[in-house]
Image (cartoon, rainbow, N blue to C red; front, side):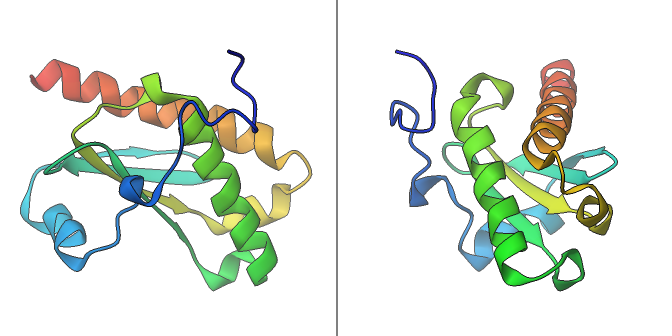
Length: 129
């Protein structure tokens, strides 16, 4: 089946979202992997169960509809590319304010950068194991 937005073969459910305070506290107590890009920063740490994600956008990025759009696009990129991250790790994805200036080709910018950053972290994790 082709991976398109209507395909729910790889759903991004609430189970995939970092929501609890204890999950976020793991980032301060355990070893972190970090990867920096022009528009995004990704932090990763060993989690308790499957891969979970948090997408953080600040008010400096723009109005609420733009921040929500960015988070929706990032969730969709993660949903469509399950091989780009390691299961059992938690990820926090920070969106930098520099993205607001480049909103014309938003999906392509975010997709290219996020997949590169996730693959960098995946390589670092595999080297340490």
